[in-house]
Length: 160
Image (cartoon, rainbow, N blue to C red):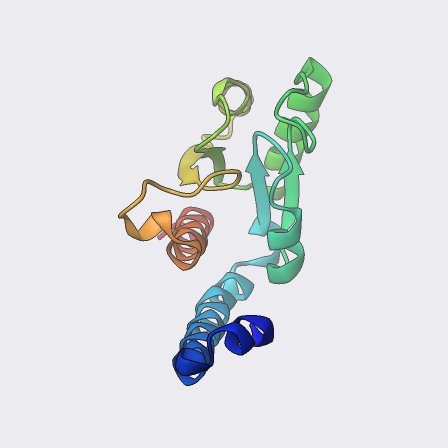
């Protein structure tokens, strides 16, 4: 930012004001996301198709279970699905999530497996991980995408 202000001194104050305003919005977003800490501890499990939410989980006290690991190219094995179902049953997790950029088949297999074993796990919604929402939408911005993910996760795991 300092280099940009050096090259455009005529608008340096405007650039600094914009930066400060955006940082304030990020701080407000952080405060909004604190709602995740109010989830019952046993429900703070975020199950998705791949492990793209590690940073998010650490920031908000969520255990992240990604069926594929970090790469969307990885194969999901029966062992991965069974272990995830066991976790859902043990912790009575009410919802799992699909991602906007990942095939949902593995998550559907987890839901079906849990249901066969007596736990009706809902699809909590679609989260944005590797891609934001469409241009021109709230989810097409970083703040809007993050807010969407927080709201979707909170509502699904809290039962609201």
